[in-house]
Length: 389
Image: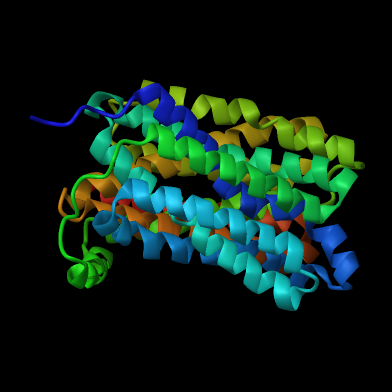
């Protein structure tokens, strides 16, 4: 007799909270770049690595822990990985005193934090009732996107009053809470699929997945979505579009309705094929980014705030559609590794985003908007090509 499905509402609540907390570490660095750079006497191009180092470690963690979770158990990897992140986050607060120590510690924090996302996506595919998986997946992805707002808000509020180190202490405490909640809510792991000696088998499908003609265009489109999303937010910070910290705080918070809308719009578009959804969403994201870049000065902070909701909505729908398409096309035997690879390339794009924004900072938002819109146009073409295979 089949084991009962995981409880939907508690899983959504705890997974969305952990998703927001985990990915929030990437965005939390953005408001801190200035104050950390002044303390370390370091320029913007070097400080951008404080965000990127976490992102690269995060992506590597996906590729490492996702396949392992199929052998060791989803719950075990998620809970212990989150617990380890308590320590690595605290290390950033305690030991980081210069880019030479801060950047490697942020990469280490990213590696431990990366235990959550791929194992969580696989857990949803395996343990959530099929008719509710789409909404659960979209809500968790909305949590990842909410991190762009929540991570920056927490960092700006806490860092502005208590200093940048206090930001990481607060996040370490929240990761401890998340570990307890995850252990409470998640179902026990099923028996291991194979002996530890065959652990290497979990990674063997990766080359075949990357060359699969039905999956390759999706994997190529995926990093472009998050690259544009993170680069835009970093560009807004570097360009100083808001005249004071309070206005910047309001601008970041203004995108929350777009985050909330992601799972609802996903449910409304449930009958549309996932690849078609992702193509349309990437187009929405591209147009929104272009308008912010080219017309940002004309529409002002209020106009940018409205457009950021479309940016968040487009990124969320595109990521959810691509994830669903990859999982569906990979097949049950390869799904866990395929989704891990998806999350790896997704946040690989996130890691490159701050570097792109820093490289184009001299040209202002207009140049950044045009470049990002062009990259998203490529993502649309790749998604359309995938829909025909």
